[in-house]
Image (cartoon, rainbow over all chains, first blue to last red; front, side, top):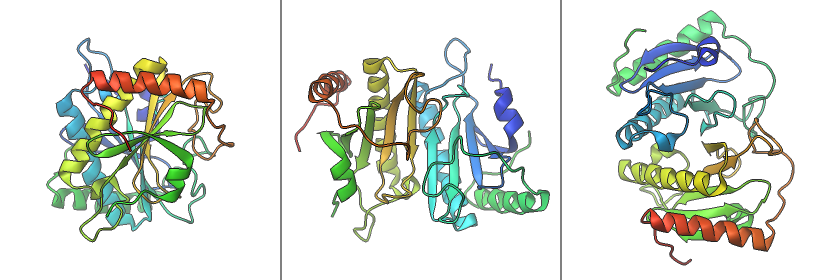
Length: 147
Length: 147
């Protein structure tokens, strides 16, 4: 059975459940940084770690959700570039980063991972971002659902 | 018309052309590091920069090629984890990194991008890796083709 990794749970906030993935916001206001976590397990009930170990159907669905989320994140933030990655060198459970990058962010043009410390979101700013994201996702046919 | 970015051309070696993408080896023997470059342009003939700007068909094909290449790279290298990313903060042309990571590589568990300088491949080691990769890809139905 799928069980969310405790570090992902600690470091990010559930925004909504999409058909395959939990859509989560990394609690770090240095970047608008979303994480998709497919609620998928392998044939032994173990967590999946590699994208290529997803079933063909789940991989297609991850791509579909990733593209919708990336498009919405770019539109809502007006960022210069979306960064997408599955690293998983520390937290093995398959998770897919979708990050809005700008030329004035603190690690531009380098990658964001492993640099400095997270700055938890200011509640008001977070709320504004989340409302805009979920509204735009809803317009693309992804209706928000609860935890 | 698709035209390969000159920096991608300088820093990597064409291994084969897959149905959508050029499969290239980054010329840096610190990591077995492959790059997929979709030979795709948008409706204005301009290079595509974001995954979500690919047509649905091309995005699916990128995923298919990525999964095949990632699986083969993991098998051939015996690596611990595959890292996948589209960053594109410096080189805008859409390119998709697929990297074999190990606990003893120099930046583990951090990301590889923007750290230190590339060490060009020793020709013999490169040849061995490339032959193994192309053979395994061929077994998965991707026949090598020329430049």
